[in-house]
Image (cartoon, rainbow, N blue to C red):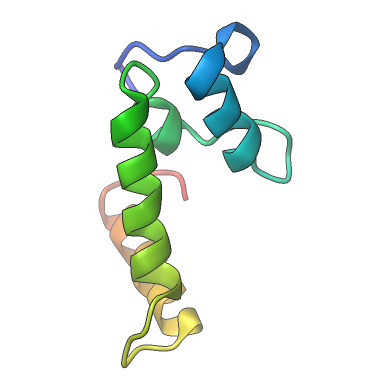
Length: 81
């Protein structure tokens, strides 16, 4: 878990609430990697756009290969994926 102040979903308002609603995971909440941007919704939008580009944009790597790289990097960083 991040040691960065994060606004929980239940306290989000305005633009942040709209972003949280759009980015909620299938389990019903927003992943911590996104919530660390909660004090700066513009950075949250930018982070998500970067993620979409890296994972879904045109590339010489398949989607599966990209996910495998993400898993290895997360494991190396001892980060829950």
